[in-house]
Image (cartoon, rainbow, N blue to C red; front, top):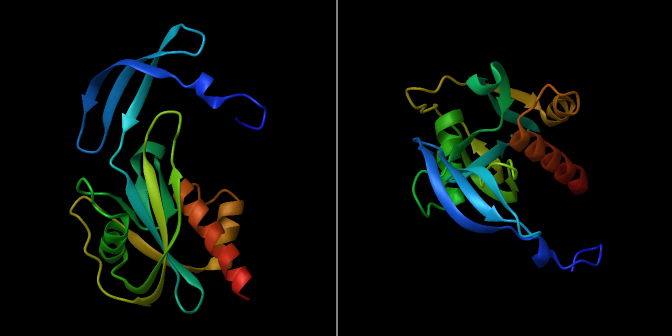
Amino acid sequence: MNRAGNDDNEFIEKRINSKETFRGHLLHVFRDVVSLPNGRTAEREWVKHPGAAAILPLTDEGEVILVRQYRYPVRRFTLEIPAGKLDVIGEEPLVCACRELAEETGCTAREMKFLTSIATGVGFTDEKIYIYLARGLAMGIQKLDEDEFINTVKIPLAEAVDLVLTGKIIDAKSCVAILLADRMEKEIV
């Protein structure tokens, strides 16, 4: 039962059929017909995503390393934590996180701590991002893919929190990671 005293099972939509309408390198789009709790049917369009891992690199000096890149869908530059999709079926998110940290920032980490996982857009995708905090950083050289154009930016964690709270960092995974890291740092002190 949920808080309202209702049985959640009575609200589950059941898939009647599913049709893949688009298959890309990253995304697969489906149109499903579902049976609604009231007996009617409806269409649900949704995007299948392989999942991803993201990392908030935190230096010993309390600075976060963010990546600045142009994001075509929102037509602007964004500040984000390093991240990437799970490349193969069954890839461990921690393996992906370590790879993406090295590729996008050139860093390796002595410690990788799992923070949380988030569902990025529950109304249209099954994408899940696993978020880690990286500490004990050793700097190296970026190993970007040929279609990646990324600059790294180092800023104090408190400044990153301000950028989240003022809407200058808009990327959801980055907002969640920065706010969680800030809370953790305050609990340690």
